[in-house]
Image 1 (cartoon, rainbow, N blue to C red):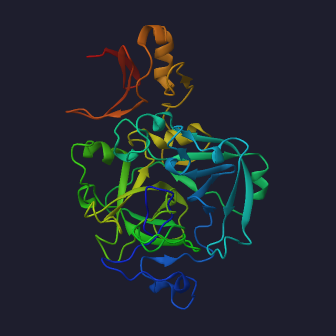
Image 2: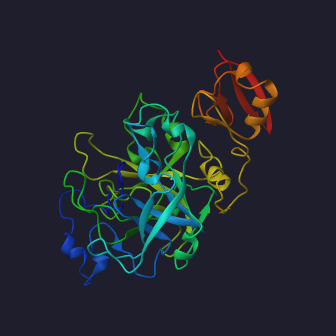
Image 3: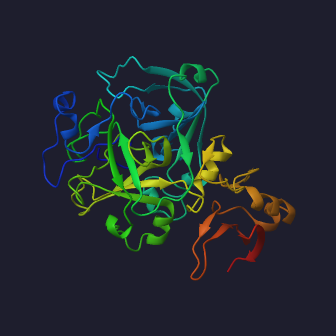
Length: 382
């Protein structure tokens, strides 16, 4: 399950050298627990995890809500949601843990009502590495289906989104339908769902090696990490097709989703085959863009904490795509809107401070708004 930043499913990767099981071996039921890079999920496991045909891995987190990664639904040319994920488009979901010839007895053709991506995700250079851009929202998307999908997906359980903190050492399970050989040897995505029980590692252990591009602390505030096979031969690595796959808290069988597969890092940037570490978008209340509260604002029921009001009552900008929400929307309106503060230049997010906790902040052309103990403070831009 090597995961990647492109459409990804979990390829639980090969160890430090070659030796991944072939496609034929993966369909062999003889000794599934011994397959390199994790194991094939049993038919009764992780039933909320879904395969989006021709795209990524996903999960059902509401009667009509499908959780994915933002880069799975994004068009880098138009800087908007792909046409295939816009209202009225259809997508094929598969719930079987084994898929043969792209067909399964558990296939559902569903219609999309809306696809949600945090507004600032489309700002900046979409062709760059999004997770390393401090101004860009976290890599998460939510697809809302039309009402008839609720009956069609009635056999698929709904996983709960857990917004309590994920800490170093916590047990998690990563998974996906992605490729199984590595980025340098592209093959069709797996026809099986593969999963790996593992533990959260620190940013330092992840071999984060992009100094000067963005603050390591900002990366840490948006993502958590798990070991890839270049770090631990007994671990699993993500691969194209694994992106958007749910990360479950605890041991196998858990249905608490704490993140989604987003990215990975390598020991050598010139040899990007199997990852050193896997990156997963954080949902907890202290994450950089408070993504769990954002999901709650779109109708997802969350557990593990009370969602903030950061995404309540959003106002769109007349110039940029960046929204102004929650307490900032109220303060923005009371101040006189864009004539007084100018256009929003960034989405609201937690900004780091040299001393003290991070502060919920949004930058406008003429001012900066900060939230302190529930009260909004207006600052002059330097």
